[in-house]
Image (cartoon, rainbow, N blue to C red):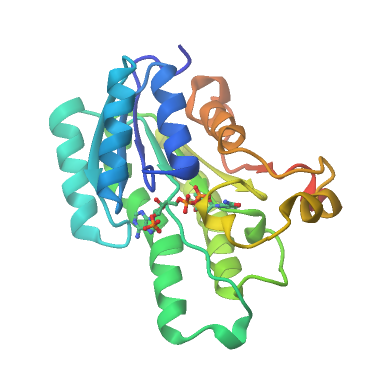
Length: 248
Ligand code: NAP
């Protein structure tokens, strides 16, 4: 039980990597607050985790909305009195080039991928400060480390923002025992990229030294390490989980 006694709040948890993290954290003893805009899937996840003996509460949250954040924090504190771990996982991707990026798309991607991380951090910090501890895990991407051909640059900009925002959080709040780290997944087999490659096997063989796409659980194990006290001296770091993609 690597997260025994901890309360973990996860955004974008109804499916994909967030759902895997909710299930894994729960198996490792955490009480999980799963949040997302997808209420039906979120409720199903809540039921599945609780049926399997875990402790999960689903709460609706659009990460770009400060009022909804206030509500989630207050509901969480009513039930659990503390928040030990925040996984800022919710995100959207937009495919194409900068020619395809309207101002509306720019604002929407930045609101969810970057402002959402800022808001989550802003609203949990006071609670973590009270307890003198906390772990904030921000899901960036390999897209936050380098440019790419097929994705709108606004996505890279948003994930790059997450990378440096994480480091500043680590620098400013280390004195309160609060850690902040970013995770940089490569190609992960979720709905987000399901439609991007017709013949994915071949594409990933060429691109990725490990020659395959990853399963969401492979990112969840990284998040588990950062959430647990095993990473007690790790802050401001970047955990790249990409099968070697960016090593090339
Ligand atoms: P996913 O299956 O699409 O899951 C993302 C979840 O976030 C979905 O349930 C999505 O709901 C939700 N979401 C979208 N906008 C939201 C908002 N405003 N507020 C709250 N929740 C919202 O994708 P995933 O692969 O698990 O992505 C998780 C994170 O990993 C994202 O930050 C993504 O950018 C990052 N990432 C993914 C990959 C990859 O290859 N899959 C690689 C690198 C990084 P909707 O379906 O309504 O959008």
